[in-house]
Amino acid sequence: ALTTLNLYWNDIGDIGAQSIAHALENNRTLTTLYLSRNRITNNGVQYFADALRRNITLSTLSLHENRIDQQIQNHMINILKTNTRVTIHW
Image 1 (cartoon, rainbow, N blue to C red):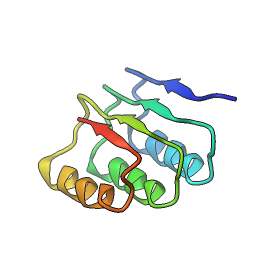
Image 2 (image 1 turned 90 degrees about the horizontal axis):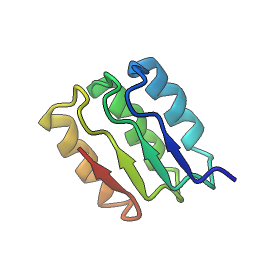
Image 3 (image 1 turned 30 degrees about the vertical axis):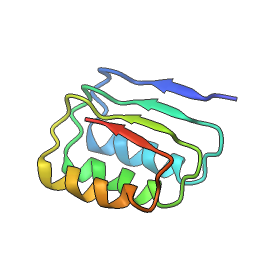
Image 4 (image 1 turned 60 degrees about the horizontal axis):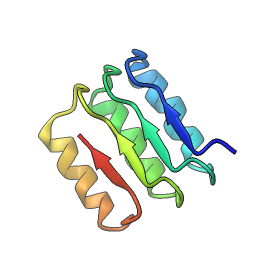
């Protein structure tokens, strides 16, 4: 089973982020997801916020060097209070 997915610098944007986040909602094998440098904005990160409320296996999410501001980072920090299994790298 796939446990690590590296999509670094694939220009997936928010539409790709939405698709990946939707798949994460019910995924039970992926533990590490690298999405650095993909032009993901606050809107795309919101999809991951929703998915992380349901996902129980992801432990690392890398969103380094995307178009994400402090407001959405704070929102994600609040979500991590309920999902303590995952670490997000900005």
